[in-house]
Length: 351
Ligand SMILES: Nc1ncnc2c1ncn2[C@@H]1O[C@H](COP(=O)(O)OP(=O)(O)OP(=O)(O)O)[C@@H](O)[C@H]1O
Ligand SMILES: [Mg+2]
Image (cartoon, rainbow, N blue to C red; front, side, top):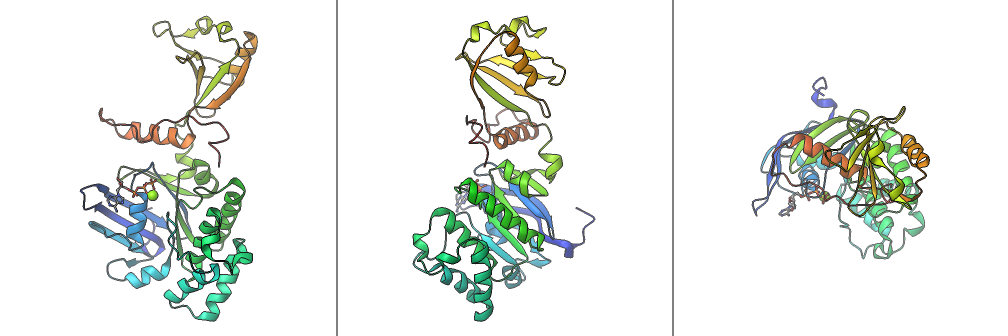
């Protein structure tokens, strides 16, 4: 990013630190640059410091040290310019729930000094695009969770900011609405707005974003193009329930690890490097490197006449991704996993 001039940066964060009053060091010297026009994802496990970072950029949280500029305007020296350039969709709902949908949007425009006629025009444009126009007279308290989130997006855009920052915009939003929000965000990015979002969905970052930063325990541990980062070193683990596990003879495989008595490496034409091991409860676990396919495993299961009752992913890909990055970056022995390993079905790991 060093080739970029400052005026091409939508967001320029240098040496940003934040210690909360209780002593928690939420940010430990973060450097982050987002180019104008970019679609940027901030990834990180719970408590990584994402919302703290966003809060500082939006002047809702006071930094301890470091500098933040938005389109060349320092949050310390020129907070009004920064405010005008940023549209913020916070993680928590924070509008007045007793106002109508229309009022939530237009009152925010008023706060930013936008003329009433212009505010009404933009409100109509964004409420329509976000499928809330029919709800404009309803008290915002009566909206569903997904509608409330879209209302916050409409509100964040009414003063026509250059940089839109969304803190987990699709959390708790159903698949259909999530897809339509993706389309909406893609559209306004195409129209020229810079977008920074946080998400726990790897698929979301992959579908939308060009660049990502991975933040863990207050440090940016990776930064780069999505296409490079997310395809790097991601393995995926599947768990199989077998109807007749006793018929699967892992020990017959050439690369069976006799010392461990549990694991075997499946060497297949297209699927080199699938690691197989038995779990304590008798289920089969298969770990696949990037780009590997499951066919050789199914061939083996078929050949040994083992029937698969069901399969699922062991953890969602983002969690696996975090764990691998954190493991790789944090070689200290006392490190606890940043994200607890949870098991989820294939469906649940998709947005
Ligand atoms: N107001 C606060 N006072 C004290 N500590 C805080 C405050 N807000 C956040 N923290 C702490 O700072 C750290 C980072 O929190 P933050 O909310 O920025 O994480 P996050 O990456 O947004 O997590 P999540 O994915 O769960 O939203 C956590 O340890 C959190 O407990
Ligand atoms: Mg957060």
